[in-house]
Amino acid sequence: MKITNIFRNKSQNSEIARLSRKINKRTYFDKKVRIGTFPNYLLIEPTNFCNLTCPMCPRNLMTRKVGYMEFSLFQKIIDEIGGKVDFIYLHFFGESLFHPKIEDFINYAGKKGTTLSLSTNATILNEKNREKIFNSNLDHLIISLDSLQKETYEKIRTGGDFQKTQENLKAFLDEYQDHKPDLNITIQAICLDENKPELESFVRCFQNIDGVHVTLKNYHSFANQMAPGPKGTPMNSHLCIEPWRGMVITWDGRVVPCCNDYDCKCVLGNANDSTIQDIWNSPEYQHFRSLHTSNQKDTIPLCKHCDPPYESLNIRDIFSRFNPSFFEMNCYFNRGIYSGEISDEKKFFWTEKKFEILVQDRSRDVTFFLRNNSPFSDGINADIYLFDKMVKAVKIIKRTKVFLETPPDKKGRLLKYRFVLDKTWCPKDFNENSEDTRELGIIIEDIVN
Image (tube, rainbow, N blue to C red; front, side, top):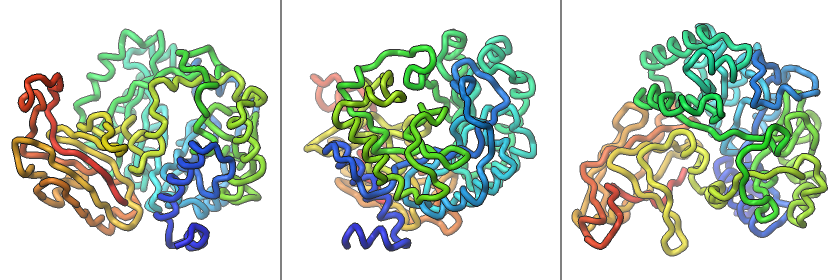
């Protein structure tokens, strides 16, 4: 099937998303400026209103008008990209729960084959908003907390009520354990001088709660528009990935290239009067990419001083064939999976005895390609759970194809699969000269969805 025909056929959304990742990746490495596809992800800003004035957030420097996205504009955007992109983040610079129609936003965008994520500061995670979240189609919730100590919290989360926020969080986690909804939770702290001594205890507090992941996020200087953060490899040695990967849409429909543009300094289009695909391929976007490919990014005020810490980043991981990308979700939730390795130019992942992995259902079910490379066993038995329900028991031999049919009520959602193996092996036990002491389970070669 020709690519042009696929893009005209709205029933082929999952194929469009797959081709988008493939073409975006290829054109990035080929330094092409016209890419003819959709972004991998979108940040959509329901509102830029926030009740806090955190010192590490550039919202305090924002000069653009405060407002709330019209539901009709949101519907237009989702109708254009639902199922055709990997991720939709329902936040940019604001507390999204303040939008009076946030529940309608979530439910309209949910179950369309795109992972839906929202971030909150938990200050208004009250009973009403908790009920909205638990009864919605939200896939992933980030709770940004930063500290469990009153004095530190109030230094960082300026304007927040520590006691009330703690009460909201406790009630939310208690209700989460009772409801067991199809929701993945990340509790997050930004690493700052103020909370550095507390971070270890912060992780310990939440790490054993079922269904909850803890993330420590590095301070971000927003292209050095804030106080400088940790220095990375100079930008000139890396072609920025964002013009080939993502798009940000502010509450009034303006399109900017990345999360650094908090004040709309580099507007590349408007979602009110153009489609997302047209903007992604517009002359403005192509020119923006060309300035990067020709080493002229210093002529862009937004990009001139950008210095992201790329030395720890495998750029190819960002365009991973896993969906949502392994890079994105490993930052949040995948558990029991070792860092990727490469053999014969193909990337694969070893697992532990128990592991969890998130896969976006694109309404065509999920197939895992797994391999048993243990020199001690011809087969490894695996019990597979979807959320908390066991769905299949399989024996992993050499290369094993495991087909998992998505239940009707989970179609289009972010799925959490948990695998429990009956045995592992250690490379050092097989070869005494090996320095590899890991307990290895099976290999994940590929996931097709």
